[in-house]
Length: 399
Image (cartoon, rainbow, N blue to C red; front, side):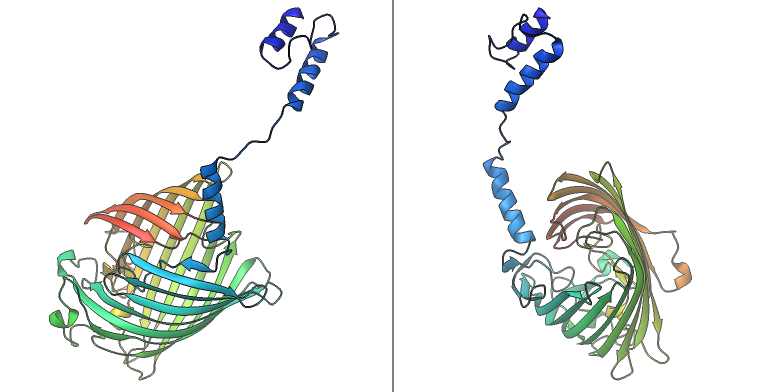
């Protein structure tokens, strides 16, 4: 007992003289006295200045406390580094109006306003009303199919005004999802700029469907799906989504109308209390032409870029149908920063029967994500595909 009491004093748990072997009737009494002295000297952990600054900055930009906010979303994938800003204003307790715009050094421009009502029908639904205009100046077109070559790139441009409304409902508040939307838009496809030749210098309207056209589309869509326990779509570490979306693109002149059906499955599998997450995604897009009408080349499904095949240029593969498979191993560094290792595989085809797992383009890489509880405002990734390396800067989650 004396040796134990002496060890307690030498360890600094009790000042000399407080504990003596004679006063302590038992080993338990000595431990209790030591604990009482330790409790009197407890102090809360202090957060360092650097952590305090980062926490304040993150909370301000990711929680909606700041009206002015950065807007890094490009007018169209492949436009390069983006500069932009937006202003968000609450128009009621929950509804917000966001006016935003962006521009790139290659001349891509985007300006739009969105009204979001997230708490409709006693929190069973949400509504988004969006209107805007965008311009892209050098979108890449490499030809159709898996045999298209990177060296055959030609550029095209377009301008597009658009107005849309999207209503989403959870009839049982959780799990079952239905969504419906309407968009009115005009695609005005024109010549491209940049180092590659313009599409009108390489193709004619006889060899490239939709070249130089300006169709006005009434675009309707409907989704039926299951959304399983995802906390938020902009950032999730558990749950999943399984759904089918049907699109109808009706051309005002009945020349370039078509239908498209999208199939998508997403699953996040948490490991070690969400410290690690295995995230998986499969997506297929299939198109159906309307009798006597064509599908413009710029409206066909495509792969390549920051959210699909990340190791390839934006819009690198294009055809009537597409298949995409993605897997990620995400590791949480802290509450607002993740690191991910990923692998992508995909293909396009002129026939739905050719959407199999053979001869797919693949890539792999590492990603860094800055996120909040509900969204990912900055994602930086380095990917390696068969045609070299690609560096991705994005303002949204991959899936």
